[in-house]
Length: 246
Image (tube, rainbow, N blue to C red; front, side):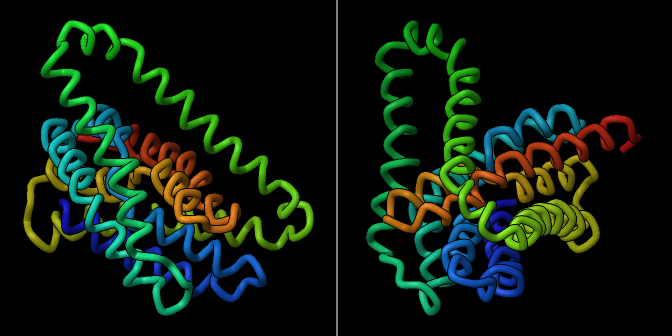
């Protein structure tokens, strides 16, 4: 599952980005970087809820999300540098530093609070899911609003960006199911879980990373649109699987 996450999505983002975004004008290189950041990000926590609705293996989903999130501190910067380093000047050290700050430090802080003050952690955990949704919505909405001028100036970019983001996630869901199910002979439940984990990314991390490394504002746009795209696609897929026998 982790291999699918960090092989299928980065390669798909690279291929789709080079085909649709890289040569699309002055914004092309930044959009290409943004899409690769999405593809190289770890699994999103919303995948756990989607796995529950889809009658997949929720325990496996939580485990895969946790593993990919922890590994992201090293794997995400390496993959981004490998994929876009020959096209765009990106500092590998800046990526490592930003990823560790955004991913590793909050996880470590949460573990310390849970260990030292479990009562406080229990009370706070009642509100954090809603707060997370609000925060991600504000981040993504702000990115789209910041780039509204670009949409008005170049309407041809809108279908290209949306098509790239949707293609990335659709291919992720599809290949993430076919490889374990048909290629490796895993169970239906396990294959559904890996598909969801592969197709759903921590898009908010891609947005934050794009800003942390000093990329142009437009580089955050694929991540902002991805947050909505993979949630909608994952919900549709979960609804389909929920009503279908395994």
